[in-house]
Image (cartoon, rainbow, N blue to C red; front, side, top):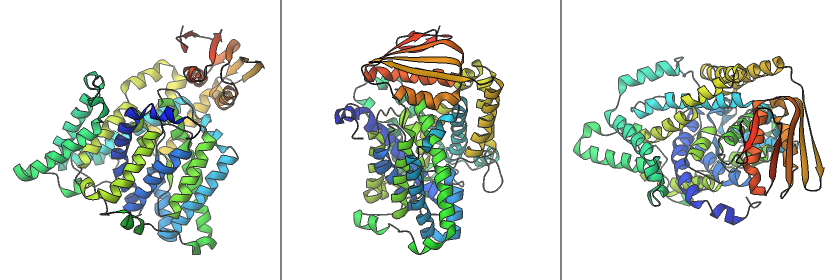
Length: 521
């Protein structure tokens, strides 16, 4: 965070503080639900969320990524807690952090750049669809399911579709009214009428929806008890009043387990799976970033490692970069990591002092926020855009969505990668490019075929270009330029003006410069 001047962060406070409130409202129930699904105390989930907001975000090089407990690790954590006990599991989490720090120093973060954009967009769309399906039961007041995990199959062998259908047989009218009204509030708050209002635009729509939900339930309990929302459909936090009780809830790892081989096997598994999920989420966040900034992956692994070590040492769950919270952060208008830090402080302060008040929030309000986040991730427009790019882009995109829905996040991504690799090999991949320099003048020459597998070295070359320089991108010799390479160049050009880098395009096939950005000719 110190690498940028403080005025850079102060410049966007009017965007970042409201966004931090929104992320806090989204993250709170997820932290609690993932902890329960992992077989750990809910407080462990909150600890992980606080560390993700106050530690990882500061060390990380990403401006918009939000870290916290991840649903994708619940099976690993639950198995470790059962085999090693909670204190032994905490020791494994701490060791996984040390492994991630080492991975950052050996530059293992490059593996995230080898996932094609079609697969990443498919992952985002699948998560959006799962969010919608998972949150609809909460929106109608049916909350028998574990909170917001990202698996299509339920614990009782039913699918999310069958679970979703059964939820509509147990509708709570009060929760349904709150969720529908909250969606209406969020949509209205996203309209130009609110965005153009200097005062109202500073108030996050999610906060307005939450206030409405709390007031509705308070009035319903007095005027129309049948419309009141049942306690099990409200946020549930342990009651803590002050820092002393908060620190009294902290747990520490069992150092007596240092001789248990299962600790190190679990630590390695958490480090590998968590790092992959982090890198995939980071790649997705870079795609969603309106300013098209690229976060340093190796620094992110180090940041996650520091966070996991601290989290494990004080009783928290393992941490990864989480796309659900990150996308909510971006959609709420965040510009810098200040939003993530704000969300971390709110998590900490709310658990310390406001647990009684937070326990009045209907889950239906939070479900409404996630429903709209899911829709923005899986818009029909995105499907059409991928279809228009051709089968080599649409097939990996569609297969990734289907595979994630029918299996889980990691398996689905692996299947999508296999399909993407097939199309790359089919295109007879031949890639080469070179970067030459003469003073402050650079020439990036693309030669033969340039595919998404060249994205990592291309990024490395672009990072070598100094500020206040002139870059010519020459595609005269290139016979094929992959969509991922085009998007990487587009992202670089959009961000180049911040560093006073002037970019000129020369014979980049199918593209010409328009307003400093690559656009269709």
